[in-house]
Length: 372
Image 1 (cartoon, rainbow, N blue to C red):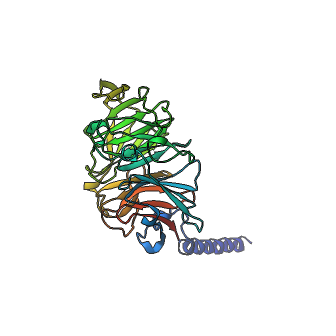
Image 2: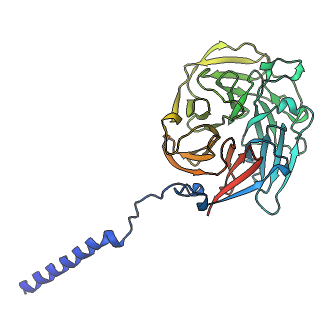
Image 3: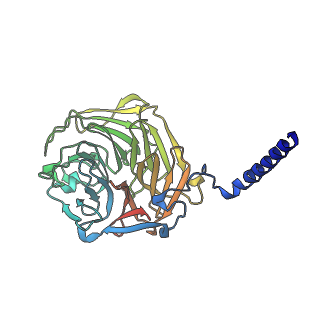
């Protein structure tokens, strides 16, 4: 009896050994993470792995569309700022059979929406635009360094992209390249005139078409540590939980990060055209997250458009036509060649259905990418 039991144990152990040896071949390793990001082709880097569609072109009024954003209060609306026509094109029901659009430009657009390079939405219907010019937009009434960001809202009964529908405007930040919303009427601006990142608090807006800017507050950070390239947007994205501001620092060929919760108030800013509270900020912390010159396969050449989506930073490279995705440590996760070539990619945003939506400033088009 003892001998029989021993034989049964040996036989059972041998069978189990055979099963164990076969497991690595027969059973997939479920611990392996998926490769890449679906909307960028899941690591294939090929347009054959995604659905890329042109959803709108110049016939809708698009004229060098530099940035775009879905209205958080009405997600069926996509708003686009056009640099060359100094206008806003609004689309309803993008990429559907019922899509329609309207282009807005009126008296004062040449000042309040002068060559816009960027826009940023709040979550309550207000938004701000960055004007990429230092031209004399009001003749000799105001100097070249007068230009600054403009505050708007989504009131379709009033909006005309001009003087009559602007809610507020602050000054002395020409050559604006990017915008990001913080809270209330507070926005961050890429100030290309001063090579800085500047925080603009419009406070209480002055109402449609007003002129009183005295309650505004301006804080200028890291002056001389970032720089724009002419005619290329330098967009911003703010992580409102961490207070970290991600910057497309185009001249320096990098994605930089500014800790907006650091810095101490310094000297007053001069000139002060608004009679408001304006100061420089000293000692704010800024560092490089993605260093273009040291990167390869592929390289980051001219970062322009930015989107922060589900913990991933998406970067549109103006020079190469690539969209690259990085984690919050700056590690490249995936990338896709859009086939758009040089001098093309502008703003990036994600639609309510998860489609990656971006502008081609050269062909005056809006495109969307979806996973297959």
